[in-house]
Image 1 (cartoon, helix red, strand yellow):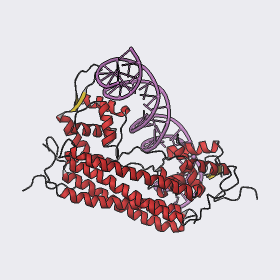
Image 2 (image 1 turned 30 degrees about the vertical axis):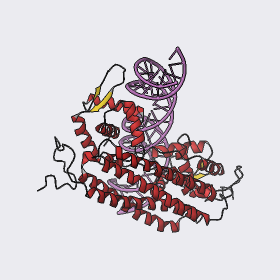
Image 3 (image 1 turned 45 degrees about the vertical axis):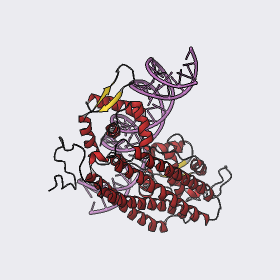
Image 4 (image 1 turned 45 degrees about the horizontal axis):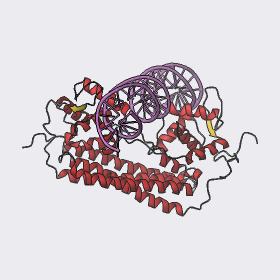
Length: 203
Length: 203
DNA sequence: AATATCATGTAACATGTTACATGATTGG
DNA sequence: CCAATCATGTAACATGTTACATGATATT
């Protein structure tokens, strides 16, 4: 999977489930695949044009600036299988939370705790969204697709629960640290204060 | 955190632990932060130049093409704290495994199982690496940093264990699926498939 | 009629990786 | 000396997002 074939895969995949407009594609990808995939207009339309040129999708409906629906062709389905069979290309990690925690000594325990609480809340929210997705999947287009969709939902749930468990553990482990603030801190720092930072100077 | 301040954060953070060359920076970031962060030469050197220009790091040693060590300045430490305090910028997800599983019906259960087994093996490997990192952290430069490093290691472990648990569950759930291969699969010839639109234009 | 949303597309920008060029240092 | 590795840097490329331009359709 060298090029932006990734986008082609996502687009062909979505069209394999249901024909739709490019606009709807973005919406679908955001709402349905949103937990593990993302595409922007700037990728979707060029990809659609290229796929059409290759005869992998076709346009139906008025072709002059009017709303038109894209549908996958048999060749497109074959291509989709081919693309799905290619090796998963590794993602370079960029986890801003972990970066901050790794240098957490510079931030001090309290700020770190806030970051972790935030992450925990996000994981809870994700869990709730996934519960909705799970129940909605019962009305999904194809019963044949459902077992696979549930796999991805389950993966999200496992990850979110792990994040929550980690956060609780991390908060506890940070609680035992003396809240001594960063080394020689508060030099020129203006009164930033942040969301929860009431106790700068202790009694 | 608008620009590539992310890179500046990582570089300043690494230099806050220990002074080193740009080359070593890449190695350190890859080996120590590798589980959740990555930078390439193409980012590190320009970032170092910019940081030096701003007086946040300084160069020590011969400055004519010879090996030189970069060290963080007091202003750099202050800037690091500022950067670490900025909101975590969300990452757009791109999980190739989940994309494949979501359209797993096109691949068939067996291919999906292979993907999951692969992911499980990677998670096991990650777990082993993290165990090494955990034991190595005992000889880390600064005892004060250790609690924070352990937080990130623990997060990796939680995530990896969750991935393993999910994989086992997923394999079991796929085992119950009839191994009927993808819909009208096998032949690469476009054997007419069409998931949603069985009928072409002609009646 | 006015506004919001749907829909398509593109250009400018932002980001990030790879491959290369160059030379120093080190170990066999 | 030769090769490998350390070290710095850059240019070309690949990727991806945002903002804008344009106009249709639907809603109020």
